[in-house]
Image (tube, rainbow, N blue to C red; front, side, top):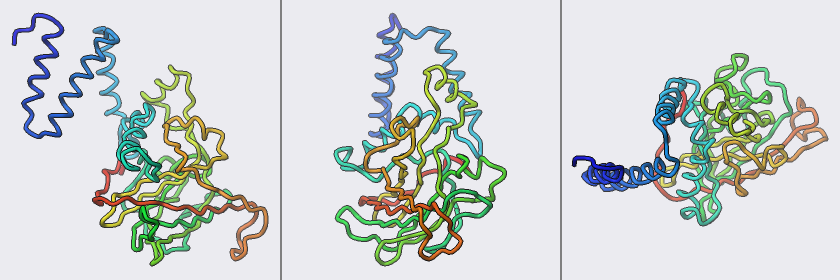
Length: 297
């Protein structure tokens, strides 16, 4: 087609997208081109703005390394990650779900730990936290033999891959649920933290007068054949940013009950007050057990 006007560009591009063999890819590409062209018209995108946008996309790729993923960080900061998660879980967004966004800091091959063990691998000051998780299906039946990968930031607000003072795989561990669907372990109480702001995402937050903080949370990735992989974050409702998470990840179903104890621990002599406990139920949905691609190495 010889292009005569802006409308011809969209028509020609849509015609090409319609030639896509795979039906799902065809659906996605047709919709993408239609919405993208409408967006350009809606904001009357200038040539300079288009060049700046292309530069930003390139920069996000250049900023992504083995320990940092700027694109995933941006997706969360725009609310895209949370939206995709909610639309694809909890009966397609109609009910609450234990599912949450993966985030940019999950790593493969975290060390296996026996139930009751600790995931603290280096000097990590902070109140002790004892977690007891119960993995069930949607009918409430225990899911035995599930692999549970957990990780969280340290009490200084950094994941171990960000912090040279932490041991390799500190505050990361992999457990297996028992015959009743339980897993349990010891760690330290996490705090909220700022996401990295030394790149494109940081400039966006600054331009929008937004803070960079995520409320304190515990990650879990749970795998069992016959179930969709459950990716979850359990948030501390006492965190000052529980209402305005920069990544839009907090839902009512993901609020945990982090109980503070000001007395001695009944069985751990080395635990001083205060210490915390968390009892959490994780609900898995039937589906295929497909691991996501790790955002970092």
